[in-house]
Length: 198
Image (cartoon, rainbow, N blue to C red; front, side, top):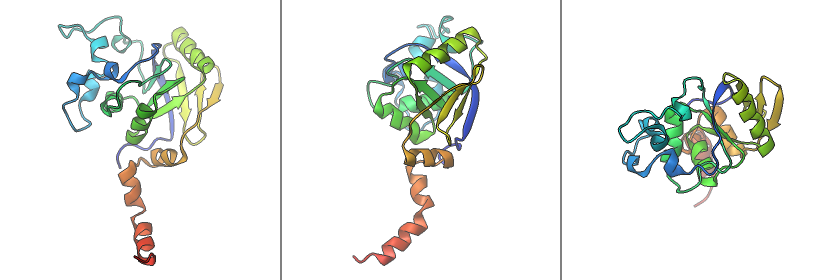
């Protein structure tokens, strides 16, 4: 499998209430030399996380020990900018399995879905409720239920549904990328080829 199956994720979340976060901020261009998906998490939000001397910036959320979890909650228009797959790779390699925002750039959304990061788009009002919950209690947990396509703030029970393409949903539930999907239906493809005249 390309990545772990995604079913129901219950986790605390890391808040990043910044709008228009682009892919160059997620993973700066100077770190795009590698072709494998490994190691990019070290440089996730590199210029926001570290000073020029490589010391951590105390005021950046990823350097704040009170926040942790497998869910990243971002502001509106997350993942805009260039189409680099490495931005999604960096999010995944850091340990996030879900990104929540009120709007995603289409290419970033698809890149996430291709590697096992679930982009959950919620209403601006619900996003505000999530940020408020985390601000009042950093260990607050969210439940992201892919089969039901819902996200719940467990502290309050407030829930909202999200939309996902049926094909991508099935792949995430099975831990498939596009190649895994084709390999999984190899028998059906062979049968179809036999019965189809040239």
